[in-house]
Length: 169
Image (cartoon, rainbow, N blue to C red; front, top):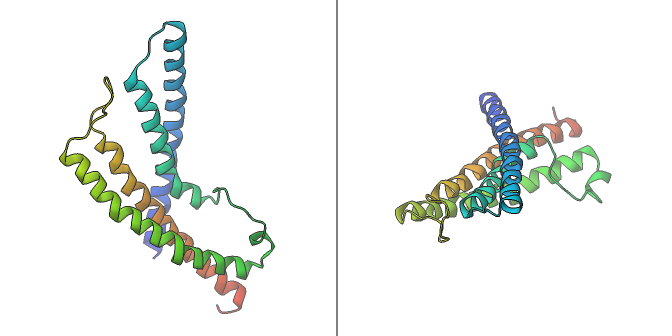
């Protein structure tokens, strides 16, 4: 398990780094697109599609990284008032009954979604749009595998936390 945890940490940090780089790239691309559109009256469908493709990649790749650093938006009205033991139990149950099944569901169905896209050589239906839309679709199962991996790591940490707060060491 320790090997998996170390490997997962490295993968999540790399995915977070890629997302950070893509964020900077997206800001530059949008800036150039806006300047081209409003100063030179020149727009590009491909540039606009690339913007939303990069935006999607940022979120899909950063999901596991964000969970690793406990930065997901959550409503802590009740959770923050729970004891550490109850918080760990909520985390354990949430990962087992919500996160893992949801990730497996999305991975399972997104693989076929990707394969059909490859099979038909899916491209943008807009004139001047981007080719090879399947590349973007490939990142759906990749991103959810990353989130699943981090969920397993989070589950492991929550079980340890629960045991430590139960007196069962």
